[in-house]
Picture (cartoon, rainbow, N blue to C red):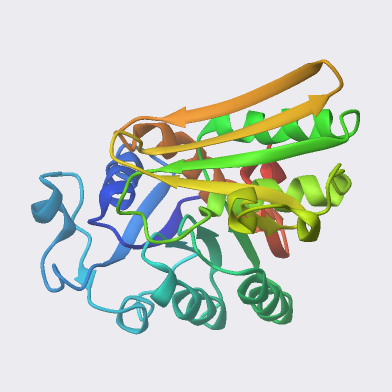
Length: 266
C-alpha cells in the first residue's frame, strides 16, 4: 500500500530534505506540497529532484484538496496549528516537525484528533540520537532527584525553548519534579539567571552563532553529576529517517502523541 503524503514547508531546510527522502521510497507518494514562495511550480523543479512531480500550493486549504493519508507539518509556529487542524478536518493523520507550539495548542489538537479518530505525532526532534537521549534522561530522573536543562540553538531561532527541549522537560516532569535546594523565590541577586521554569524544570536557552540545535540535561547528586547531551550539525539529513518512520507509523495511533518513541520499540 502506498501512503499519500502532503508536506507543508516542502522547500524549507528540513522539509526539502524530507521531500527528497520521500522521493527515494517505494511506499510513499508526495501528492502535494505547500510553499508560499514557490506556489504554482512543480516541487521537483524547485528542489532539483527529477523524481518529484508534486504540485506546490500556497496554503494548506489548497493542498488538502488533493486527498492524502498523512499531512506533514514543517512550517512555522504561527501557521502550524491552523494547518494541523485543517488536515485533521480533512481526515488525514498528521506528523508535526514544527517547534514552538504550546501545551495549550497541543491540548486542543488532541481533542480535535480524537474527535476525528486520527493521530497527531508531534516530534520535537526526529533524530534517533535525540530520541535515545530523552529515554536515557527519563531513566536517570527515576534515580537522580535534581536536574536542569540547557537549550542550545543558532542566534536567529525565535522560539525559546525549542520544541525539543519543551518535550524533554515535559517528559521529565511526568517522571517526578526535580528538587531545588534553594526555592526560586529565595534567590539572591538576579532571579532570571536561574532560567525559566518549564514543567517544573529550570531551563536555560542559549542563542549564539556557532550552534545549530542541541540539548543538554545535567543531573546532580552529592559529589557526582551525570550529563546527557545531544548535538546536531548543519545538515537536515539526520532527521529524514525518523520522519519517514513517523509517516509510516502515525496511522497506528489515535489522538496526540509527543515524541518519536511513541512508534519505536525502546
